[in-house]
Image (cartoon, rainbow, N blue to C red):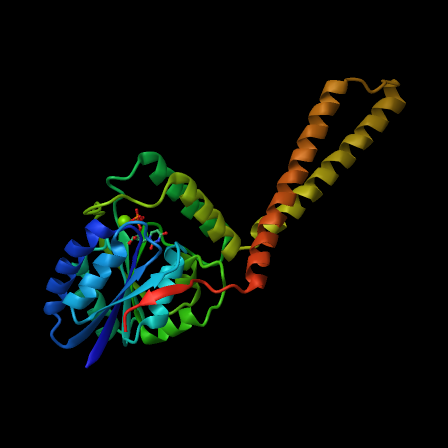
Length: 309
Ligand code: UDP
Ligand code: MG
């Protein structure tokens, strides 16, 4: 019998987990030829999420849980779930019912029968999201797709169903900075995108502040392209060319018109501009360096404090 694993990262989802499991088991009951395995990953929640997980694993036979020693982030939670999943097919979904379980049968059909290795989902709308956030999200996708060879799909959710091959490919990437939206694209394979309209959370609230999203997008850029580094040297070269031209111009002016150089304020502007540019470029290098530092330390992605048998 085909085993379908479902990985569910949870961070402070005590209210959402019960309705989630109810809806999920309703959908799973319709998949008669599939043996489900639900892996709930508690990402260091501060509320009663772990307790709810223990209850659920006692109540449902197919539910297992893994609990981290602290909050390691969704990426780590997904990784832990993938590592624990035994299924022939593995799906990841949020615990807040924003990823409708009703899509699962179709996703499974696509991967099983149509020869795809990945069934992805994307939101066609960003309804219920602050407009400024949608705007920056769109800008981010446009920017990263311009400078990176790994193309990201705007509106793509983390809600995915993967074949065993694709999961093993993901697990074979040991990197510490896991920007999974990029990793999914990087491994290749054929992905079919299913579309759905944005649904708002059933309970609790989003864990993503604007600032967290901003940092996450920087991580994505650093992890998937080195173009900013090249950009830094390009800007340096441009500055050299411009300043050479200006030097020549000043010399000529001095020789022909005997016009002395004046204006200390313009000089200050130039100095401030150039030191700003230098610091900016040093910052870009620093970003890559800091990520390398974290990679080199080779710390584990997560630490498990407790798990069901
Ligand atoms: N999540 C997690 N660790 C975190 C933050 C979020 O495991 O540090 C989980 C969260 O419980 C949810 C999923 O990741 O199941 C998506 O989070 P959220 O709904 O807050 O994001 P949004 O849907 O607003 O993008
Ligand atoms: Mg959500």
